[in-house]
Image (cartoon, rainbow, N blue to C red):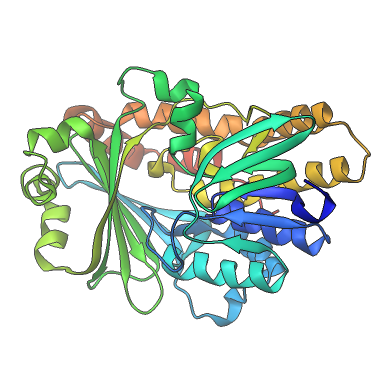
Length: 378
């Protein structure tokens, strides 16, 4: 190992947190290597709605959002399993863009910025010795001074390290599945809809090219009850909500299903084995709150600021880790806690019907809840 083979930063995972951190660090003249187990472009299970708090930041990274003719989303509809609808303007709003397009464009910006992007490269383990990380991958060994874990909701690294949320028995905050489609349908471009059903909810909103992202989250028990058939799950459980029945009977599925399992909303460690965790690897907000992508982007900025100070020898590694963890919690801990509380209010049809009807009577309560799960432009 020598200076030529040691990167300043190794980033494990090429989603929003990983790509945005890589771009920022490379623009600061650091040697950055990013590992992604898939080949861009590809689809991810994701609601594909991004809060406006991230708009300016993405443009600063080099993404020309203003010229991309993306749908601007300013309205929210939430339906109870009965079909009763709550309608609310979104104080800040957001925009829609598919991860298929967004991640691929950020990958191109990363390459143009000088990032070494390793696609089709699975990271098998990471070790830390003598102040250097060794990253073991399907393509060989790599070394770096700093390592960021941006490997999403759950990965083989989480399992290998026996992270706390992986070892927890199934409960109401874990063991979820996610399913996503792109569909063609006739719905307002300026509205994101969240349709509740027994032990789950389904979001639908516009993305680019007149397509819509339809993404739902439910328990593994619901899928098992449906004979492990997604079709039966959608027919027998989701479609009990009349709005979802209408969507599934009329919308044309063009992509999907893309699926993921064993999703957990439990608390996670922000730093693990000296690796800085970013995005969903650090903590996952419930999709009902619709703001995970902005958290990933904002978290990358917080991490980069601390990594920069460390690489400039202005703070120690321990200070970098403790500062990042404290700043991350200060920015996001309340959002995650609120998300878990809101998650607990939904699930059973009777409870959800009551909560949605009550919230419809008190618009200020709904606005307050939205504000608790969103931040300010950064």
